[in-house]
Image (cartoon, rainbow, N blue to C red):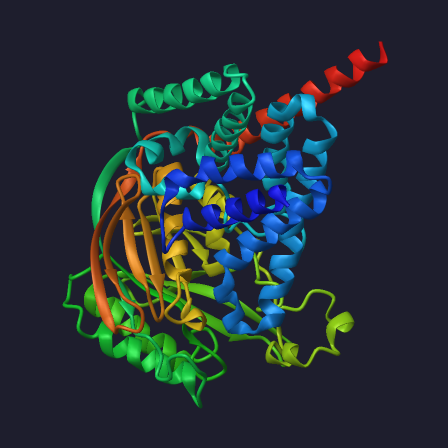
Length: 478
């Protein structure tokens, strides 16, 4: 019973580390309680899974706004991972540090890719976006690097309680050294200024769907855009879902492209315009279309990572019997190209909505020369919940680890800017209709170490943990 109490307390504290509570300092305490709980439990898999299920249910409960069919598979599937890790930790009690650090790193590496493309929301390192000192180290180690250091600190706390203080001293020293090195290493340069205008036009029927929704949404965005003065912006961003359907898509409807292009010419700005474009009765694409100041379409980016059970149904014939899935009549066709536009306003990297919570897509853009990153999203389905603030935390860390200013645009809100390594700018709140202006800088100099090497700390942790267990097994055989 004590192990269950520890595990539930761990899950609650872990939830409190994320928005809307944002008590990031609780992360190592929560992880320490989890490690203690599974170590004590006679049923480590179920104890660990209880932690996972409680944590994810408390963190992403708002996905339930889309229905139980949307949130339940996420919570159940990804909540199993801490259960599997619990089995490993219990199996090798003399090697808690190695199994905790290496196992946690392996768990996070796998769960961001499997099943159905993975889920990165709730990684242990994301709360470190809340502190300037820890954000400053993100260009070196990334979000996952912070996850490794925090679980090492947690394992050190558990072992210190058992009388072994060396791991706690080592992990604490490593964290301090990482922060010190980050303070000494030059950050990416901040180059030319650009004025960006996020047009948060919202929809004509917030919190529901209505007749001619995309066409009316387009008209609302055009009306707001006409308030931007000539030469008032270098880049104008319309978020995901600002256009689309058969009657309001700039690729399908020449009149729509002409109207948007006319505004690009009048302002003298590049435009990025989000929209969901039907291809047939069964397929569609989620796109960002780029216009240059001449009013011409100069390219498009197709979202590469669709939302399972939201934008497509995996193995659809197996799930046709579930009535709720009739709300997803078409399957999104994923794009294949990295989202980078060479525009007059700069080399702009792009990700769309769900992709923005995966570091690999933003990193792809940075590796391909992006000087600025645009996250175009639509969190309107989640209403007045913590979804937007949790996504903000992710974009804030992405700005830090990639060394790029981030434009975070949502069609119904919230929208904001993250500049200078994750400094949070002015915000348009949910359902407000407004143009939000922000000054960003194009990144200069070499890409960050994280951009170049990716999850290198995570990889080292997995290898070190596996090596420790292998050494133990060989010594036992002798």
